[in-house]
Amino acid sequence: MAAKISVGQVPAMFARRQQQVFGVGRRLQSTSTQTQNPAYPLYPSVAQLLREKGIPKTDVSKIPASGPKGRLLKGDVLAYIGQIASDYPATQAATLAKLTHLDLSNIKIAPAPAPAAPAAVEEKPVATPPPMTSVAVSVSLAAVLSAQKKLQDNLGVTVPLSRFLAIATDIANEDLPRLASFKPSADELFDEVLGAEPVDTSRGDYLPELNAIEATQTVRSKPVTEDLIDFLSAEPSKKAAPAAYVEAAPGAASNVFSLTVPVDEQSRAKEFLERIKTLLSVEPVRLVL
Image (cartoon, rainbow, N blue to C red; front, side, top):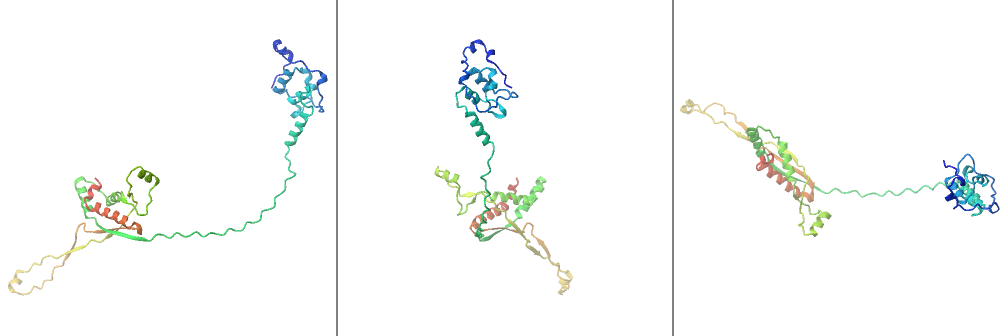
């Protein structure tokens, strides 16, 4: 709350600099009869203006107040001493009072908009899937089975067949030849401008399908042992011929690795399958060591 300070409380050195009090004859009376509400203190800016103009504290109640809730404004003081028009504070107060109320008399309800015509449904062309082809390579897993047995006998470690296949697939996907329709990236084009050689390979993401084929069975016949008595008597033996037994060659099972890819990826997929075949046929033990 701002303190009320009279001119008499100001030190003498500052009081001598104050302007002379204006005569009562020069003060213009306002049409408003409302004065400063004693329930509220003076605004600090108003109190400062009163000190600057040399208006005593006793004259505050004579100045018409146009502020909110009957408070004195700087414009009231300036109008009281004649520096501005006497009706200026009242005019501004009326303008502000008018602006505080929202005038809705000119507002009219807008007519409802007409329903928009339904937009024509545009049929999107259905993308035609590219023609597909199947690429297959027959691979023998005899070398892999032999490598499994060596690891088990020498190291006591059992490496599952899926481990060999997973590593071979990952290696075969490295640096596959790019498709003819491949478009290089902006970074690759920039590197070529700087003199770098164009990159002709990229990593693939192929995962082959494995279809096992039953191993070829080898039929062996046991030798027939002829009785000595039958041989000397030159009579044909009446013994039934011994039954043949079947033995499957170990590791002779053949497996077909296949891929279903678009036609333009046929050569790339075939290169991948040939790598799988080489990795599983030539020293597959190096895949896990």
